[in-house]
Amino acid sequence: MSSKAAALPGQKGLERFLCLGSGWTTLCGVSIDSAWEAPEGSWASSAARRRNMQAIRSRDTEPEKLVRRLVHAQGLRYRVAARPLPDLRRTADLVFRPTKVAVFIDGCYWHGCPEHYVSPKTNSGYWSDKVLRNITRDRDTDQKLQEAGWLVLRFWEHEPSASCAQQITDTVLARRARMSES
Ligand SMILES: [Zn+2]
Image (cartoon, rainbow, N blue to C red; front, side, top):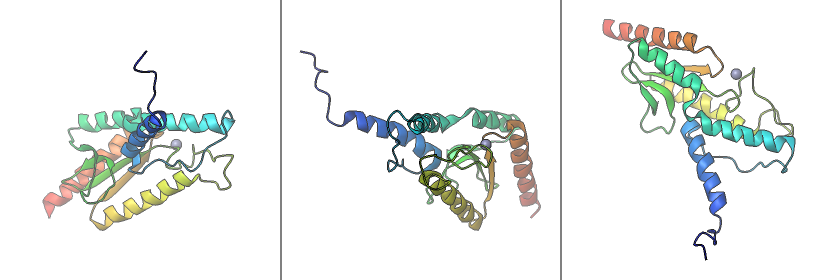
């Protein structure tokens, strides 16, 4: 008798949760939304699954890695996927602590990019509940960081990496210069 014959009850569901949960938590700091499930086999079902996969892959997206590499090549150093404010559970993609610059490279779907967000066909509203929560949370993060003296830079993942990197570099260097003057 194989010892693997008896699967642990609920193991499959747990795996799925952990898998989605970890990808998502790393991306946005919020837990997954299991409230909405598309009917199995429908268009929405496969689209939802694809988005879940995209969320998992988003941990270190290509645009993000490229931006990081370009900024690094300019001689700037930063923390990756760190909290600008230790007591606030919000994670920025690049954190420049001395100059208080927080950079977010937002995924087009999950953060509601005006060019690439696709409204779910099965939902009544334009935004899915989760995307709406993300957008609300993003604005709240912006406000809290600004109140604490941080500058927030946000880019969509579809934006050209080189121009994102240039804006980040210019901003950090300008803040640094201003700090050394005062
Ligand atoms: Zn986009």
